[in-house]
Image 1 (tube, rainbow, N blue to C red):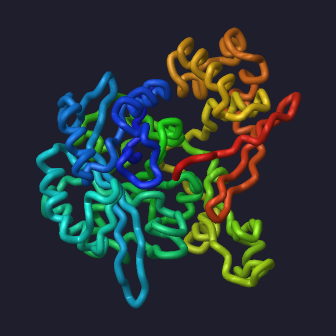
Image 2: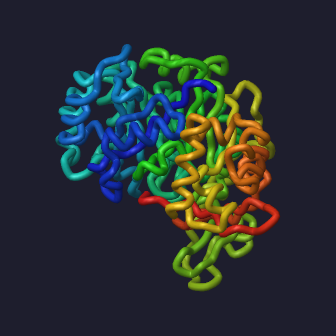
Length: 409
């Protein structure tokens, strides 16, 4: 199975986040999913930091323990700053090894933004200054650009991002050895850029509610501590980092171009024919991740040699709901989910490992076959655009309802 890690999520102290995102519910959801290492998220928020220090027990270097789940200290920060006559808005995930270093970092950035108002603080600080501050405090800190391609807040985003890691981080570029692909892109899309060959691709849920924990994740061969995690990411170690778990990128809410208010969704090729203008309102389209990838790519085909492998999935509740024609949050779907995860151990085992014959012994035949179809990537997808999640359909004997990705984020 491996050692699954979800390194990016938010606590109840972040805006637009479920009040259930506390340690109790995060740990419970991680167990159900099959995740053994969770990021804490939000360590810059004083109230959340107090809860973390009070409840987490040291396990091994840089790893803490709560109710059978490993935790590592993480935060996402939102840098908003002026750059060459424009405004840049970029999210980054920071991982640190202990509470002492976290407190030093928090103290150093306090003058650049409020740490109390949101679990993901807004900092009036350039990315170079953020990196300089972070690495002066702890040279072996891990800084990962979050959801790299998202139009708003992605490092390469079409609305407020950069064209390269070097442009964004300057002298600290060599300290950036991993990036997060985000829900709207997957490894093959990133493999179109030779500039990312030396960069390790990671995938995380960015969950704002317990149900979304593990919708993307990372699989390591064995449990890791902080130094091992850093070394694995820095060296892109394929023996120790087995694969990432990915959304189908079309499901992400910024995959295609479009205008949500106009109900317009277009492929990059269709957008180019319209000069990137909405055919309904005449205003510029929100250019999605796929369009932005194509604009920066220097390859026509992805080059996978030497890169970390990946697998795509659809959350189990959505597969069950689609198979039965029910909403994923209904009592019936939740009941079946609990039965299956209790019997087989966790969701990832069901989605990735359990043979069809064994699934059919404990699940409705349509559900079992749908799980295998997703595993074989036999799905139909209507791409997401401009903040609207994509829709996945799993072909079957009888068409169920659409599988929709829904989130507080």
